[in-house]
Image (cartoon, rainbow, N blue to C red):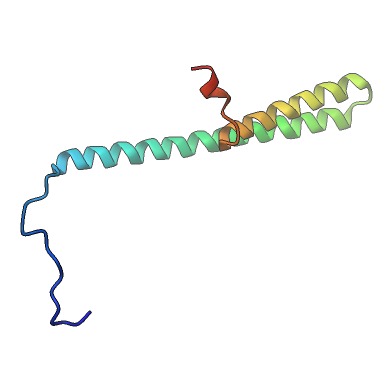
Length: 95
């Protein structure tokens, strides 16, 4: 773009967006995004606790019962991780 070319303008009309409303909207969206991120991290930590706890339970103890319980606990962790990352949508089915 040359210095001699002029950019297109909107005719000098004032924008129809109120700055206070725009600020409130951006603030609410940012806050919701940050809370969603924190919640996802908490869910993933909880899921890791269940997965590793279940694997530890299944490996450390001998017997069929500990393997079954460990597998179930690990699967609960996998489901929590899938829900937290949006792979599944079980929560939308219960609304």
